[in-house]
Length: 464
Ligand SMILES: *Cc1c(COP(=O)(O)O)cnc(C)c1O
Image 1 (cartoon, protein in one colour):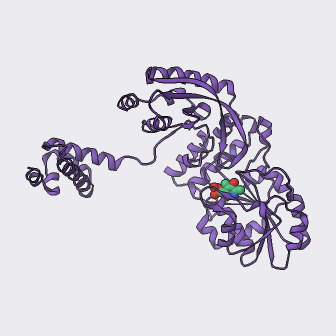
Image 2 (image 1 turned 45 degrees about the horizontal axis):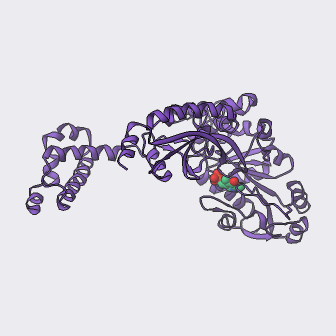
């Protein structure tokens, strides 16, 4: 019986010759149609072999082909509602850009631009000059170089200034940032020799001084982005490192990671080292990310002394690591917002989310709570409660932001399952699971209505 049913199935070629696909054949390629048909026939065969179905009508098979076409053509990168409370969520693309940056991106994507043309002369220009004057103004540095991300910035700075030579770094600063950025590995891959000094908790000026030889090419200082040490600790400040380096003509590179361009304590946030402070303390090169606290696109920014930046820009690796036109367009627009710092909490989404008051979040959470109660039905318990959000992206690791969340529980469905139900929504809603409940944090959600799932969630929950 099963064999007869299987034999009666059309071949892939026969299936796509079905008149139902006449229109589709002009709309989609033969390869796409064939793939969709092949998957559909495999699905039907599976249904028959498992005994689940005895008969699959022809129009059901063609229907399967159409849904497979749709699945193949479905966009893979989709909008996800970030209700985790994490402002810079690396797995969700870190900084949300400002409308100004989005507009700039659209322009750079859809038109030719003066990316590398000097509009005064018509001659070839330098792409980094699009952001150079803003970055100089905002950091006080002499020159800038823009690359793909901060890992690339560290890599090219070290390769340029210390290839084949020694890089001195404190044992307390050999850090790992998520996603396989480990400083000692980057130093090795950049062709430099790592020379560790001091201990995990304490490093003194003499440790650096003793380690300096004629092979020393760079003193490296790394910001402890995602952790902190306390207790019996000491580290050598940047100013002192600069003094030690100057005595021997050895440059100091500081990797700031997060890259705050302004003092965040002006908005009640913890003080982070501001890039301009490192520059004025004498760092020869400072590297930082474009998409962390700066709130722009993924980019690696190197600012510092012109002589060194020029060498970095002439390194053949610069061609491999340079930022693309989309990055530069969004970065330029983001930096322009910094020239009007008073409005920044309104204009820069990252700063807006970090500084959002708990009262405002509470009002949004209450609204979302009401709507969720109505949407989910009485089997779910929905309450608004206090919680804490984090900045994320390796920024301000010690500082949690007080927030309000909508906490959701169910008699029988576990918080982990509720998490996945919300993720199944269109668009997916990403919350967090903690202390036996599922939570939606309103800090990073513009509109409470974004958190209301479609009816499919209630239906799916009903079947659990
Ligand atoms: C985040 C970070 C990096 C890596 O930056 P990406 O832009 O993610 O490549 C490097 N160093 C420090 C100190 C960081 O915080």
